Amino acid sequence: MPHHTPLIGTIVAGLVIAFAMGALAHRLKLPPIAGYLLAGVIVGPFTPGFVADSGLAAELAEIGVILLMFGVGLHFSLRDLLSVKAIAVPGALVQIGAATLMGMALAWAMGWPPAAGFVFGLSLSVASTVVLLRALQARGLIETERGRIAVGWLIVEDLAMVLALVLLPALAAAGQDGTALTGSIAAIVLKVAGFVALMLLVGRRLIPWLLHWVVHSGSRELFRLAVLAIALGVAFGAALAFDVSFALGAFFAGMILGETQLSRRAAEETLPLRDAFAVLFFVSVGMLFDPNVVTEQPGPLLATVAIIVFGKSVAAYLIVRAFGHPGQTALAVSVSLAQIGEFSFILAGLGTGLGILPTEARDLILAGAILSILVNPFLFRFVADRTTREAADEADARTAAAKAAQAGKGHVILVGYGRVGSMIAAGLRAKGRALIVIEDQPDVARRAGADGFEVVTGNAADGRALASAGIGRAAKLLIAIPEGFEGGAIAERAQMIRPDLPIIARAHSDAEVAHLERLGARNVVMGERETAAKMLQLTLRGTKGMSDAAAT
Image (tube, rainbow, N blue to C red):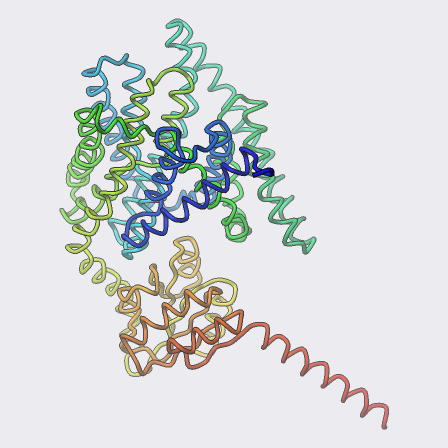
């Protein structure tokens, strides 16, 4: 392999094997993250065969961390947090404290110093944003009471972990010199305060202005590059000038950008690159995992998994019940949090790098994460069997008034409230047609609700979302999402429920048109064809007008 370099080998092996393991995990109905972590184990130094360069993988993982935290900031919603702040804020803080104490107790039993126990326990206390949100979305629970509580809880955990990432260097300094703690914390707080002030006073004006200028340039490539430059540039500049973590800088960049009208476009344009580097991040984490921990430390590993899956879940259940919520809500929230993920990996990596956390603790955290992510879907499925009917009832209650008004008239179900979907919705409202929107992106669903439309938040390929939108009484189904093959899955499911339902879908290629028509869409609109036909019509009309004028 004359052209082989460690960088190319690491990227290619990481992505190819991650794809294979992710596809296998998807086939087994497990989170793809579990497959990516296992891919890292396969290409890591503790298993035979090809071994990727761990140093390069760690640097690629840093980019993954920046883009992950930028994405968290983009989707950070203060409104979601405030709606459930009465339970999410105290509940999350108490649960973090309980899980941290349990982790510290296990660390004490293993003879680790208190600082190591604190970081270890903190790493076990925070759930994975990716795993939790995808689990809630897949089951249509985002807009239910239990879903809102879980998401608000998650936001508080994320903010607490961001603060922990800032303070860990001070904890490391205190470990070397106990008298340095106060000075270290004060210095870090001042640096962070300076960075936050700069972002709020300057970045809040400069970043939106820059993006709007780029948008008006008309270059999609330049816009995509501008978003990535902001994410990476702010993160690197924050670390260089204010000595704060890449994660914090990227989070604030995403949060400020998330307040602008361009946030959705920024998220869409950078999603492929964010996903690719997020995969490399999880692969690099898997590379650090030593499978020997399963045989060498079975007792501590079982205790770690028990803290993650049962300990903090029981704490969350009791907290939710203490606030007067029903048992099913408490059970759903507690199971949602019964896993750990990306923040745990970041904390473990930082703690090990600072010399606070022993490598065996990092191995236990990684093993606990992998096992909890593997177990969580089965726990969620068990709970979902008991709560899905309640979730559907809640969704039906939200749309009952709209359905009652639509009875006898036949309403339209619109899937997707993006640029095309929102224009369709406005046109239908202008004509007085009853409409229910299905949207799987919570921020877009909120926008549709704010525009005055009845919204079901969930995946339209799931029969529950279609049922909640009243497919049994609908007059038409419009699939306005840009992905034709995903639209085919929606059309297929709708046809299984209502074979006589007229379906109108959107496509971008002949293959998508054929796919949609084969799966039941009676009318498929291909954007390029319609644009060409309209432009041709206007051109010929103009030519005829000029000829008539010349003749007269």
